[in-house]
Length: 314
Image (tube, rainbow, N blue to C red; front, side, top):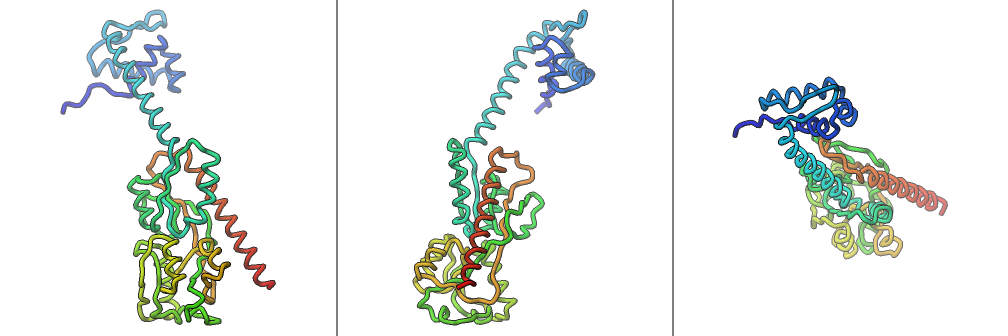
């Protein structure tokens, strides 16, 4: 394929000069200097081998070749502005968000607030494990992700810290013998059946590391891998094993007596990050949604602190 002699930038400069009939006016519209505009015109004429403009008494006149070219350039310009408008409308019409399964409940309030603020923007939420969300961001399947804070070790990824105090709890059915213990260490969970997320789950890696550091020398059997907090909670309620959940996901079940938090020494906290591709075009709605998620995380931390204080008083 033979390379084109036409440079798109120079054609746009030509369009403005021809439309304004003035190099000065074109330079103002394009936010360029007059010598730069003149350079583009001379470069275009040199590449095509034809005179396109005549300048008489500081007024611009199109030559025959220039008039013919202007018809095509005008169409190119309108097609370009139409394409830009289409892409901007497309970005503003929808926002695709990947959310780590751990945070689906606490993100719900942010999603609800966003929909009230921008009812004409379609929000598409995909829930999966943190590492799967990161892959979706990198492959542009979502505009941004909300994940557990980890080192995902990818230079194409930009991380924005939203919170570092999201509480996770290990829960079991009250009828489960392990829930009868008054005090537990991680080593006491050795060999106990666990209900956790898939291998791409960041929280799964966190709890397995805590078990290892806590003195557990044998691998704990993961009886079920789930990619849904709801399914995991149902299985734990039915006595199938111990599950790790965000405190907000199990508040109602704990209050109703369907689940019990295991009395481990030391609370488990994880961070929340928003992740985006560093080279992705800026989405006009992404920053607003990130702000709403940060507010939701802060509100959740405040509630957790208040609950802990009330519990101590009792």
